[in-house]
Length: 247
Image 1 (cartoon, one colour):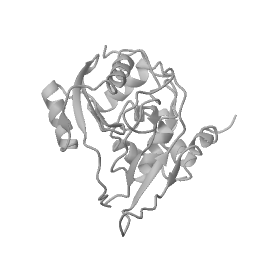
Image 2: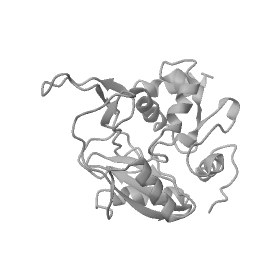
Image 3: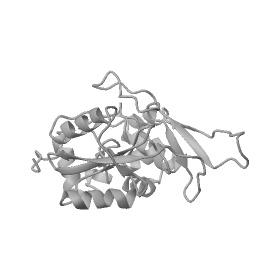
Image 4: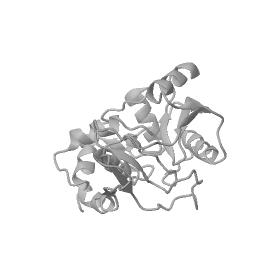
């Protein structure tokens, strides 16, 4: 039987990063565009929010992208595990906030993470994404690969980790080492873990499906920490995890 990294290696080849050359201004900002495949899922299409699937602006850590970015907005929504929040732009989803103990702390955390986002009612293009996330958290898993993500201010390496992680089906897992090896970074398990700890869109980028070596649960930076991680794995009927108890 092939190793886990060998099984996943083909998926990593679908992620490519290209450096766009700008003639509009000099010097051109350090930026990359990441493009992944148009994944087939339970949805025949994703709701257009002004940009293609899996395409977003990616900046190097510490670099400043001086290009004008589209305005962002956010909205709270109720789920089986509490009040979540979604942040979006004209290109796609920028962030997803898992519940804090009460709605107001959730709103405060969104404002801390995305200070330029204004609270706004859900537009028609974003409502189906919220419905799918809500259903997923109620025990009806959706791979959510059809959801467009705006990777603004995300490093190229982190972006490649997130796109690979999106290739993991509900109910399946990989280890941090598997992801690192598949991305051509053997020995980079710690860097993968750190990237997933910065994941701005949990659930859409299912970082809970990446475990430590030997099947250990590993870390989880979202509210609830590894308790939430176990419950997310359980509701997806991941082998080795008990039935969910949050619902």
